[in-house]
Amino acid sequence: MKRRAFLQKSAVISSSFMIMHDLFAKPQATIYGHNNMRYSLDKSWVTQHSPSVGVNDCHEMVQDSKGRIILLTNEVKNNILVLNKDGRVIDSWGHTFPGGHGLTLHHENGTDFLYITDTEKHQVYKTTMAGDILLTIDAPMDSGLYSKSADFVPTETAVDNNGDIFIADGYGKQHILHYNSKGELLNHFGGRGEGDIHLDNAHGICFDRRNGRNTLLITDRTRNCFKRFETSGKLIDKIQLPGACVCRPVIKGDHIYAAVLRSPGMDIADSGFVTILDKHNKVISNVGGTKPSYINGVLQKMQQEAAIFAHPHDVCVDDDDNVYVAQWASGKVFPYKLTRV
Image (cartoon, rainbow, N blue to C red; front, side, top):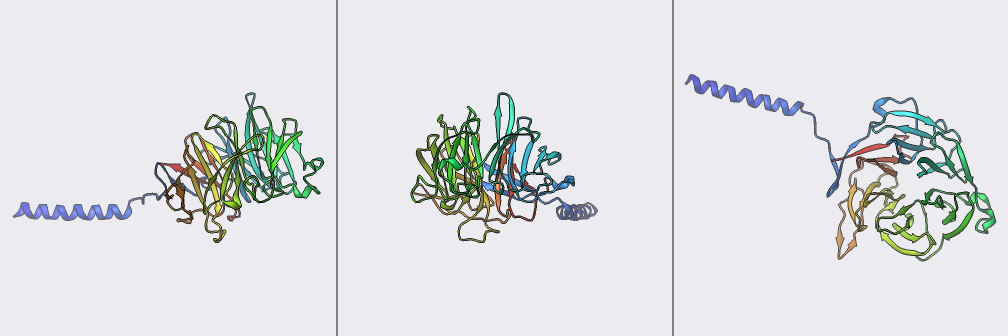
């Protein structure tokens, strides 16, 4: 009887301990996304280090050849922030880009360079990693495309292997402007208008070489799609993304990543998420969004499911496949980090 009482008492103590352990155990992080592209979210990736710098709108991010994360903000106290992957600010520069919007990194002859678009100054700049301006491209007034320089509102650039520069005039006349490395205009295509060859909110542009061809992938944000063009300007195909006002495409490996600013017809502050496409250009994951669904090969409308982002504007995918999300008009928050699980 004494042994039975002892065992019963021990069971009660053990059960009580397990209950207390469960009560005080650290809650598991919520996982976002779908299929094999799932992530935990860290909103304090930068702020946990209490940086002495601030941000306004966080527009775009890239990773340089040293593994550092480069952030462009339109805060003229420090337009460029250089961070390590732990979120510590290790450098900052730039006071002259009040409309800093597009940020592209190009590796040229063993050296990294940045291309910055400014939507308020209506210019595009090539800079060193320390901020020295090497080239400035103004509105191409001699082209006959613009009656005034204010109509040129560049949002993004893509740089070819030979140094040719493609500028997306995503907040202006919607042209894609092709320059050589000296800043001389060679060609143009797109422009505002009806039909698939035209663009409406050509917000982003990048090179897509996944299939062995040197093509341009360009955002048509109002029409909720990406369009693929030859560098000559010939339309190849388009990728429909119903429910997603996508920002620029970011290609890492076989995948396309993009921030979705919002869904059309929904509250602009409460409908953004991050979408990820596979090598076949099929959506396989929506981080903060609904699970992608195809019926008879047609992607169904997507929308936000978890309100973890407000106005996501760009993504950067690092060499560990983690994703950093820059947000526009989001209360001056630093970028969030999504760690792949």
